[in-house]
Image 1 (cartoon, rainbow, N blue to C red):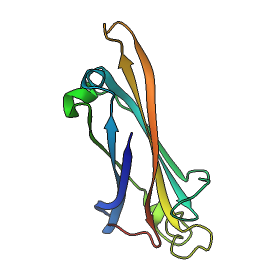
Image 2: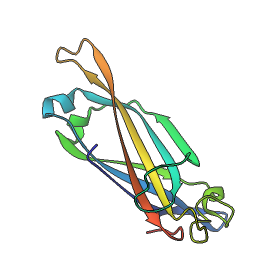
Image 3: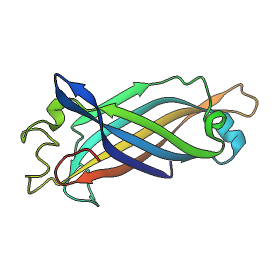
Length: 153
């Protein structure tokens, strides 16, 4: 995973109030198109953090983690060649951003925590050239979504 970009987006509304989520866009590369053809994603994990600044040296415990098994029927190479973008979304529950007492609601008011960051882990199975065996592989990347008050992009 070469890069990870994330943004807060409005997903819809719930009981008349806006509903938000995070959209992740990862640029993923395999060593070759042949290796990408043998790589099938099996799961992903999105962890949400509040951090003291844009370049934190230590990420504390996440306030939200989504771990999702996904069994794609298509290899990475069939959808994008050796390199390409893969997108993920996670709908944030209102209790994570509604009110100053919530992890993201406190961002504009906290002296300690000022930024919202995410960590994406993508797990996959890499098949051998003869397709008889496979081995698990994974890639992880972190990104700061935004700093200051929580708001959609």
